[in-house]
Image (tube, rainbow, N blue to C red; front, side):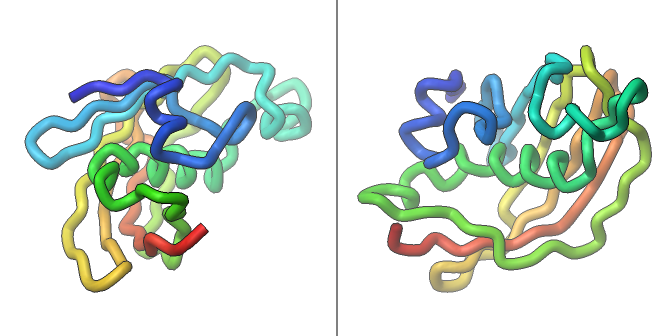
Length: 140
């Protein structure tokens, strides 16, 4: 299953500047997302002038958003996925305008409204960041 931006909006509440996925698909329990950094994003404006680098926290957000396809059946009726934690976050390479980020993440455990995942973000086959993260599905 593959989803484009308009379909992703049916799952995630993010809009405009905060929807950081161009597409996402599910393959054998793994979410694979893509986002091309245009260069005009709000988070690049002053990070850093003349030497734009995607902030690490934005890479974390892109990774988490890509997990949405794995939980599309749970995120219904106004429910929201919200971050509850991040562990073992590592940044290995810089991401710059023009780069296409590919995320790969999977859900490792679920308990109640909580989901525990792990994933990576890569550019050109090189891992830029990796993390374990958790979130909860809550009433909106």
